[in-house]
Length: 153
Image (cartoon, rainbow, N blue to C red; front, top):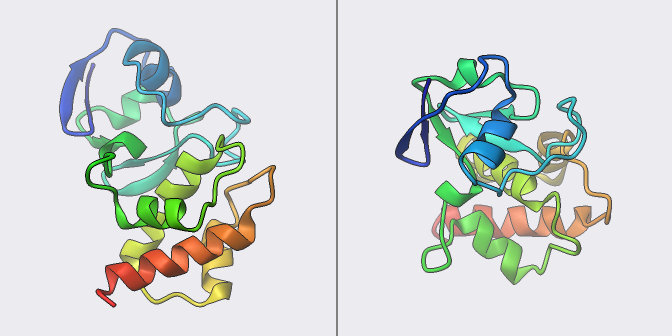
């Protein structure tokens, strides 16, 4: 099957029902998305498929065939961080960092839809992403900072 990940086409020979997470990590060496729970509950494996947030641990690779898959590696790089990535650094959000790629991918998708969110809207949008370190106040602050940046303020 052919998968397009971060703008690069890959040919992979995997079972159609193999979770996209395992294709990304084990077959393609793209390790930003993390395995957390395996049942689409924690959000550590979050990626975008055609711009939609999906939990790659339970999303079959075949469902992403011929789609545009974006991982955290595809939204920015050290020389040109996405506004959300930059805000994460500025707010020093990460502690252990394990959930952060999923948090960032969810936050970036949310801010594409709402670049002036209230605290309640942020909390609602991020409620499906778990952080065992409890960095939720810093996550909210980073999202507010990124929103300000995205609005050009």
